[in-house]
Image (tube, rainbow over all chains, first blue to last red; front, side, top):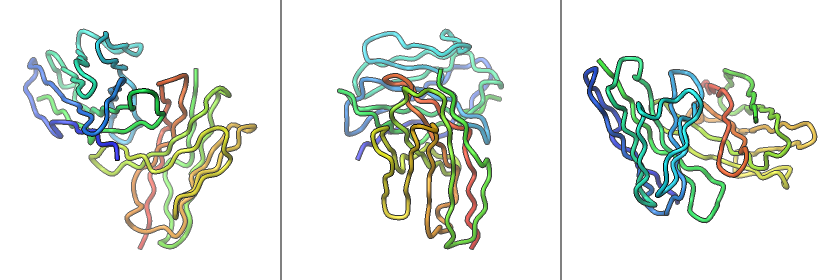
Amino acid sequence: GAVVSQHPSRVICKSGTSVKIECRSLDFQATTMFWYRQFPKQSLMLMATSNEGSKATYEQGVEKDKFLINHASLTLSTLTVTSAHPEDSSFYICSASREGGGEKLFFGSGTQLSVL
Amino acid sequence: GENVEQHPSTLSVQEGDSAVIKCTYSDSASNYFPWYKQELGKGPQLIIDIRSNVGEKKDQRIAVTLNKTAKHFSLHITETQPEDSAVYFCAAREGTYKYIFGTGTRLKVLA
């Protein structure tokens, strides 16, 4: 199957610090990875689309300087929440689609970020 | 752009009964419609999907139907079990890579 690994699953940090979340496709190469944010009992909100070797495309209203995305290889994308504040507390989920097309989207297990 | 509406927001069924969740979409160019199951504290898991050139697809107790003319698609779960309890999301693919998700249905299967 297609496995997407996301770490950490849960992180608690102090306000003002930065947090990095990793997303890896374990058994396939992912040309494109996506980062979502999900509030309790709500749907998934696309934050940005990450393409290997190029700058991420951010959705309207998402601060690119706040949420830094790096897609350095075909199997790894990272999301860094910089200078985190309590309002950044949320469930962050990555997803990936296979290189060469393939419409199926596979999700990581999510990261619960709590900023104190 | 694409807009996906999902109903109902919550659904309770007795174990063994069927559950149906419906979604409508707005962009007639959308051609791929996946369904995801999300358990508490976990990422969504793809359970079934359908392309626009197919009207129905079935995988054991799960089936999806698509009506392109009416622009709606539905998830059918038969012989529900307590482990089917979760939040279900429909989605429509807009363009090549962008997926628009429905608002989710919280399914509770009562033993």
